[in-house]
Amino acid sequence: METKDTASQLIPEEFLALANDPGSLTSKTAARFGVSPHSFINWRWQMKHQVMDAAQASAVLQLEDTEKRGFSELQKLFNAGITPYYMGLMLPNIDAGDAECPIRLQALPRVEELKDSLGVADPLSEVPHSPVREVVHVYPDRVAFCVAQLCPVYCRYCFRKRRDDEVGLHFNRTIIDNGINYIASNPAIRDVLITGGDAFMASDQALEQLVQRIRAIPHVEIIRFGTRTPVTLPYRVTAKLARMLAQYHPIYVNTHFNCIEEITPEATQAVANLVNAGIPVGNQAVLLRGVNDSPERMMALCRGLLRIRARPYYVFHPHAVEGTEHLRVSVRRGIEVMKSLRGNITGLGIPTYALDTPSGKVPINHNYVLGHDGEDLILETIRGEIWREVGVFQ
Image 1 (cartoon, rainbow, N blue to C red):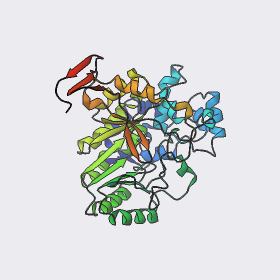
Image 2 (image 1 turned 90 degrees about the vertical axis):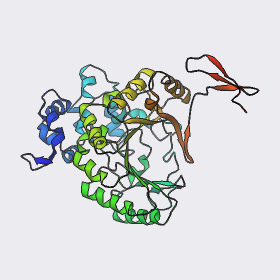
Image 3 (image 1 turned 30 degrees about the vertical axis):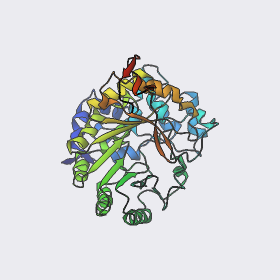
């Protein structure tokens, strides 16, 4: 059920308690933006008031010089766009005097993006793997269908920055028609990932029409959505949207929390709306310098995800995309961080650490197999002990 505010905008009822709580992030951030909390939880208001330049950002928080220059000097390289909600996640760190908070590192442009010795425009070679426009076909049985162009937040490490210069990609009728025709003509395709951009940046009606057409293809068994809206614009993920999608099961959603600070009551409600409708939610994080590249921060993230019923699914090594050198970490560090989880959190909370390549994802793991002695397997245990398993190596 939805109600209307005085501006005749649709308000998701399940977020009203947060809007009416003066101590909530929703209410505090709405006050910082000078708008009523009821308007603030309207996802279309959020998109209309994305922070896109230094003047808008400076009205909410004090920018560092590298960020001011980033807004002005990077305009032609990659758009800036941040929902007021996600800007609100920066405020506790700003008020505490922490300019290097993990939220602003992900969202605010920085002049460091101009220096990158390894970055490329299309690190996964998606364009050569697109038999028709915006359908990426790498694995035999699945495709990524890039139907959207808009995002609630333009993450500074995005590996699809190349699409930023193009126009007319957002729910383009011709692109969708050609993509559906391609999927329908390939019986090997059993799994369609709807992505973009952010796949939830369309009306419920547009999303349902798309899902209906894909679900009508007999050989498509699974439909997945890739969306960061539970993290960057949770008000978009309404119970109404979830109930609509649930009519077309099996539906899966993969979202993208990178740090514990993103797991708020608002985000928790968004995930609950999906899970309560029977839609499994997985999380695909990216390993980022200063955001989650320590055992403590990765553990906090994974534990937080389990608490809100979002399964830690993947942690991706950062792509070598243009302008991201300052956010990248070494594979050695990544292995150390992921190894620290083993034995210290339930296996359900340990994501697969992977390096994504043009040929697909490659898991990267600490090697616990040291060798064999005849038919005996020699192992390192998770506590660093040497263990001989007798007679299993044959």
